[in-house]
Amino acid sequence: MDRKLTVAIYDWDGSERAVNLARAFGEDPRTARIDKLAVLPRGDSAAKGRFLSGLGFRTVVTADGSSGSSRKNLVLDEVETDLVLLSCEVELIDGEWLERLEEEARRAGGECVAGCKVVDESGLVVNAGNHVVQPDCEMFQIGGLKKDLNQYY
Image (cartoon, rainbow, N blue to C red; front, side, top):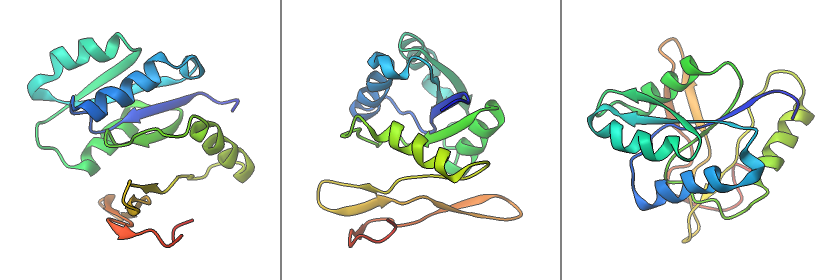
């Protein structure tokens, strides 16, 4: 993709899965061109921030207990690039996912939203995106823990 890209982990919590996700981005040479951002809760941001900066991430700090919507909106205020929002619960099992997401956005042309469905090991849809409700821009998750029947393709 010609334009700059930011990948943001909007709910980084320091769990093993979050650490693995951050390492996947920090250690993969294909992600060197990507601006990496993580949203941390205020309470323990110093140690987590040092770890993440070593992997090439910038960090922003939010109030403890802030909602997913407010963390995502904080990311939107921080970037002026194309953006991929990820939860720290994501496990990257396909090394080509980012390239395919970029290709989909390129094919759409102009401004667009592209995304992917996240399915867990047991075949349940973890997330297939969010509805954004106006005027408050509150976000409601689509697909939460329904059996994957190839919906939301």
